[in-house]
Image (cartoon, rainbow, N blue to C red; front, side, top):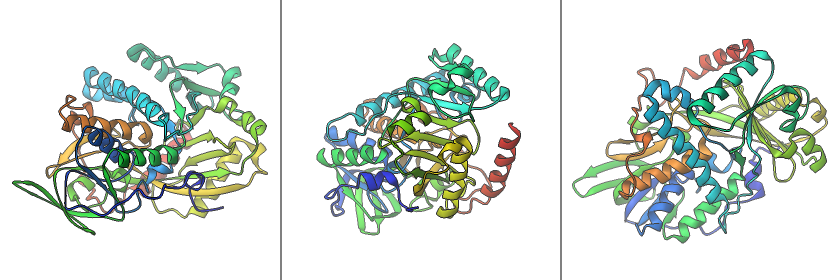
Length: 424
C-alpha cells in the first residue's frame, strides 16, 4: 500500500500558487484549506487585499484528502440543535447547511475547477431492526420539522444504493453528492490567486499582537501587519498562534484506503449509481466509488491522529471484506490519514479570540460546512451579511483540556467501540 493520498496522486497540487510574505495586508487568513480559501475568494473578489498563509503546503491538510462527500446537516444533528438552542437557531442552521451543499456544487462545477461532481445522493447504512427503527425516527423528524425528501428504503430496495448482503436498511438523502476533493480545493486555490490574493506556504503564524492600528502577526517568514485576522485551521489547530482557540477544538484522526480499479461492472455491483454512503455508528465507516472505479473506505479504530498507517490500512481492509466478502481478492493500493476538528458540542462555530476571527469545528462534515462558514464569515466582515448562525451559539471548551494533551481520546475510543458493538 502506498502511504499517500489517492486524490493528490491523481490530481497534484498546481505549481506557481505561492509567493513571498508581504509586509502588510487588509485581511490575513491563517490556514489554506476550504475554509480559508472560501473566505479569501469572497474577500478578494470584493476588492480587498488578502493574504493566506499556511504552516505547510497550500491546501495540505484534510481539505484535499477527505472522502469528498457533501450533504446537509451538522455532526450533532440539527435535531439536537433544536433541543439545545431552540427552533429559530435550529432552522437557521439547517438552511445554512442546505446552502453549503449548493455552494459546493457551484464551486465544483466552475470552469477551471471541475471537481467531478457525482450526483446520486448520500445514504446512511445499517442492519437489523434496531437501526431501522432509529433511522425511521430520524427521517420522520426531519421530514416533519424541515420538509426534507428523505426516504427509508425498503429492505428489498437497499440494493439500489449498496450491493452485497451485509446492509439491510438505508436512509437515502437525495440532495447529497460526491466530489474529487483535490480538484475542488486546488481549483479554489487557483481562483483565489487569480482574484488577486497572495498564497504563502511553509509560513507558520506563531504569535498575534494587537495594537491601536490593527494586528501584527509574527510568522516563521517574518512579521505582517493586517487589519483583520481569520484563523481557519480546523483539525490542524495548535496552541500557536492562539492557546485559547486550541482549547476549543480537538483534532482527531480519520484514515482512508482505496482499492485498485475494479472496473465499471464490478464497481456498479458494489455501489449502483455511485451513491455516497456511511454507517450510522460512533466509530463509523464512510464508503464510495471513485471516478476511476475504485472502492474507497474510511474511518478509524481509534480517535487518535497518529495511528500507524499500515495497521490502519489493514483494519480498514477487514471492514471492507466484512461488508463485501467478494472483494477479498482486490488489492489495496493506497492508505492515508488526516485530521478532523471536533468541538465538544459537535457543532461548527464562528467566533473571536484575542480579536482574531475563526471558523471551524466541522467534525467530518467539512466539505460543505468549511466552504459555507468561510463564505459567511467573509460576508460578515464585509458587512454584506448579518451575523452567521454559527456566531450566535456559545463555543465552550472543557476544564480538562488545555489544547495540548487530549488524554481522553483513548477512553472515548474504547467506550465508542463498546457502544457500537452493543448497538446503543
